[in-house]
Image (cartoon, rainbow, N blue to C red):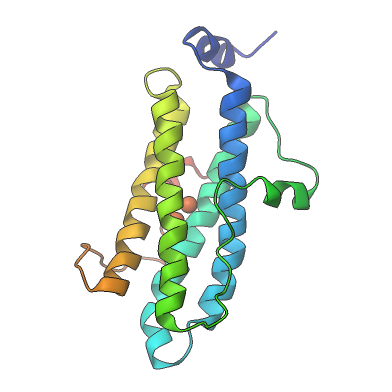
Length: 184
Ligand SMILES: [Fe+2]
Ligand SMILES: [Fe+2]
């Protein structure tokens, strides 16, 4: 017997396989972003790098949190992660945030900004698909979207000097919106 929650969102018009595909691809993008941001943060070196290091770290940990929160919903909906990590990384909904050939701070920021812009699009799409039909995924996608919009604004501010309202998190990778979905 299908879980009542799955039955109800089907009745509301959700194609659960399509939704799971969107969620697994989003989780893959978060996981790969977490990996590549680790390399970007390491390369945020020197005086200029020090100015952005903590912000890269907030975005890195929060993107990992997004992965953790998505995985719970994927399994609740009867889905799973691919058993092969190479397959998983190849289906990510955003391209790899690779260290640029010339890793100046400005070039690092461009990579970071592009990655966050992609993420804003991903969660806007998921939210539009589930809104009013799958309340739990909707709440989760909205919470993640809040943080992605902040990440985008932070990196845009660092790149252009345009104020974004950024102020440091109380703890690194605090995830003020998605922390309620995390079990630990
Ligand atoms: Fe994220
Ligand atoms: Fe992000």
